[in-house]
Image (cartoon, rainbow, N blue to C red; front, top):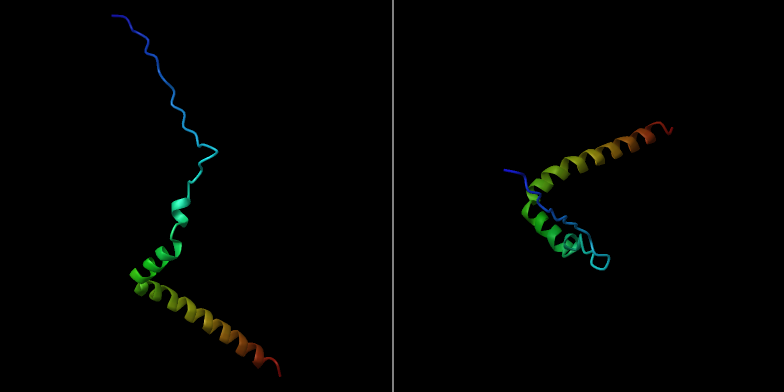
Length: 72
C-alpha cells in the first residue's frame, strides 16, 4: 500500500481594518460593573482599605508632628 498525498488547506485569521471592536465589551457599562462589584464585596473592600488609609494617616500625622517639633 502506497501513501497518497493529502491536500491541506491553510486557514488564515485576520482582523478586518473596518471592524476592530476588540475591547468594546470591557468599557460597556463600566460604572455599573464597578458599583456591582463594590456592593457585592464591600466588607472585603473595607477590610482591605481601612488599614491602608489608617496607616497612611498615621504616617502623615507623625511626619507633621516631627516637623513641628524640630521647628523651634
